[in-house]
Length: 231
Image (cartoon, rainbow, N blue to C red; front, side, top):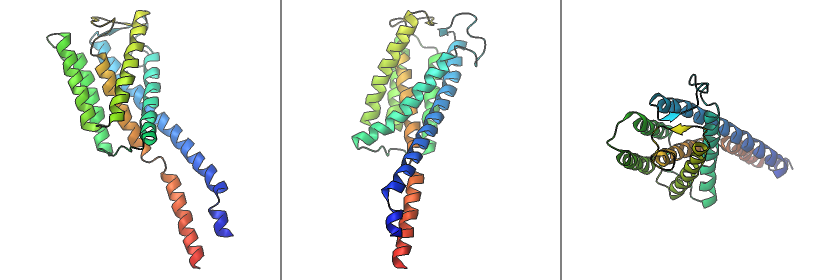
């Protein structure tokens, strides 16, 4: 009877749901924080080079500049980071390529480097810059991801992000100093694509430990059952 009580789904199910919900909230908060931090740093790079211009009196410092930008980027980062492992699970294709934090940190460093190149490095023309960033972004995907789902999601979300940015610029929320592609810079989709791949990698890495409390608890129950059966 004691064994049946211990292994009862009525006891396990609420605990599992609580663990999964808590873990989901923690991962979402961590991804949101990373997205906000990267948005502040990368936005500062763009503003310093006068690539993006916000209305006067809106930007006074890195923390007060266009407050909605970090919030939007943080929300998008959380959604992307949670979506990637969910898609992997739905497709039945768990992503196992370079699943360690050192690889994730290198991916973040390359992403920041791509943004730095778009803001700091001078190219002969925008076409050369766009092609270079496109090659670097695809190289980032090939080096740290290589999954079809990752590439597809990166393309789709980059397209949606570019469309949303075009609408914001069209409505005068902010502007680019030298737009060369429908109110925006032609290299912007490459930045979005690299950002999606980066946040997807972070989300996948965080998802690796999402069920550890559940597994530990179930292992404890099984061990206790074995002791009861053998006694």
